[in-house]
Image 1 (cartoon, rainbow, N blue to C red):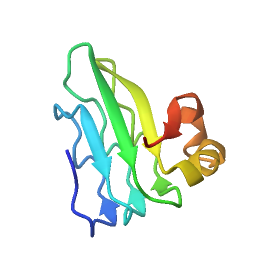
Image 2: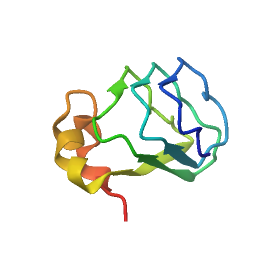
Image 3: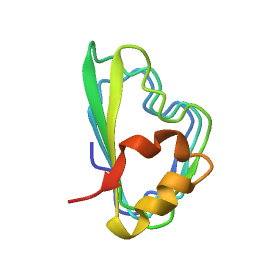
Length: 102
């Protein structure tokens, strides 16, 4: 799912329990609230996130906890921001799967 280029906030649980497998967040994103993409209903499926924001958005607890039915496999970010995301307090738990958008 590609979001509008003006989106700033994804509210809590906004896409929880959906069947999203590809999430493309715009450069304008500033906040991803708790459980925004929690417990996705994809039996054995993989989920990839592309976040185009140069500055890592605020990421609340459980925002990318896709649940036991899915696996978060990749997070793609701007190449100039890979280290910033990997070292960010809230994004660092995903450091091993954060890489540059190609």
